[in-house]
Image 1 (cartoon, rainbow, N blue to C red):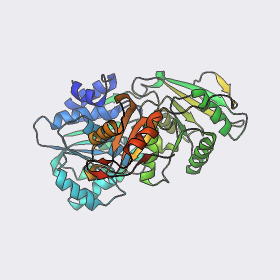
Image 2 (cartoon, rainbow, N blue to C red):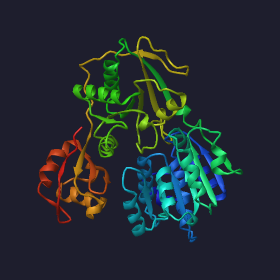
Image 3 (cartoon, rainbow, N blue to C red):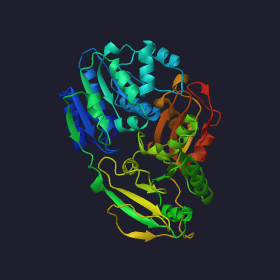
Image 4 (cartoon, rainbow, N blue to C red):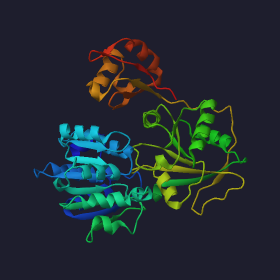
Length: 432
């Protein structure tokens, strides 16, 4: 089942959680899936949703998510399955009028929206609620945490013809029955990742833990890490320090402009940065595959935050390491950890450098440029081989491509002044 879609996504097989969730979604009018962040919950509803909508019945689905990043990434997953179902992301930060114009042109059967933007479109009549028979609420606990309870309830009240409701959450909540209905099927995989996480405590001899973090990242080499801190200012401070020391770093927090957040995130996802320094904004709702290590530079405020941060690693069936950096006056949390180690910087250790670089191209979808065009341009004009070109993401008026770092300068020389589909554009390396 779903072999063709999985092949397009580069996935060999579904895990046990996804298999059970897909079956429950198809047979039940209401289902709740509790599973840790990073376990593959998106596919657990996207695949059966596509199957239902392609079965011939003329219906539509509404998917509510807590963030614009998750909305965009969910639509990207749907598109990558190469299904014939049109999907569209709707979220704040851009004019609702522009989204309505796109809706009229695209006629999407799946709307993936933040709760506030969904209720806005429904109130204005841009979305006809009676046309939607399926509701999915993803990252339900995060939506509650962000204060979207009333907006989600309002959306449900404007969808009078619901036949199926599917709710996904990393943690349990007493609010769940109010949103999924009285009779629902419950699937609990919330402890699924515990045996694949390896916990470590790293003692810093100094209150300022920057040099200890330096030593740990050198120890981890080229394996990618997400470093969590508790404040936006701390993101800037830690990232600036690591850059000065020569590390390949991306920074990510809610105070950045959306465009800059996307650029920083893509450098990390594409492999041009080995370390992502972030607030808890990166703990949920981002498609960041294959992160080997989570580092708690600051301990999280709550146990749930700890769980969500750790969900960045040990994704799907992979193993992962969690490192807690503790200063002289900090206490270790009451969890089962391996050996406690103390690290001091050793400058003679080799600085880990990424194998990939990020290429920025100043054209995108609205310029009639797609992923195939970018791949063809960088392959034919830039001279890249199949193994020298990685992930390619295309936005409205921009694109990012991961290319082997050792080829970056040569590719820039080759494409200088060249056109993509007859259009001149900026092509340059994305800077830290």
